[in-house]
Image (cartoon, rainbow, N blue to C red):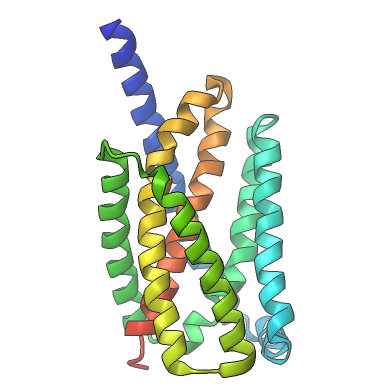
Length: 231
């Protein structure tokens, strides 16, 4: 019995390590893709101009396309690691368009500082979620309601109010929300590991890292919105 428990603990530790590795590589790929796109101004400027003219439509496109690719990753996870990996890269590339404006709006110093703060925050909250014995699933409902409220208020502020103070408050709430999501998603890795066949763990680790990548990106952009005004 103890041998079996040790084996399960060791197996889960390897799975979690793989998820966090994919998360780190995914965030790096996202940043590099966004940076490369920002340097191709002939390609990216028309897209930015279109998004500026069609705020609501661009918001919906940036929301729907990554979600569709996430569902495609999940659908491929039980079939093929290669196809899951391709969908994962497509998801990160599509998401990188959200990161392009960061390289125009903020200085390199501000971005590096926000990356450092986000990384430390991520490690702390992920470590808490991984190690705590408290069941964090009770947070799920509150975080979901909070996220829906942030999306709705963000849309209203984008289309109607255009308030800088409102955007600041939205960023503060977003940071708190995704700190909670990092802990929750880290703890959820245990449940994921216990419910999937070992033959699919590599592909499932890719899919599991998607939520953590999204958590980090939302944390980073919100921290930049608050502390990145030195440019």
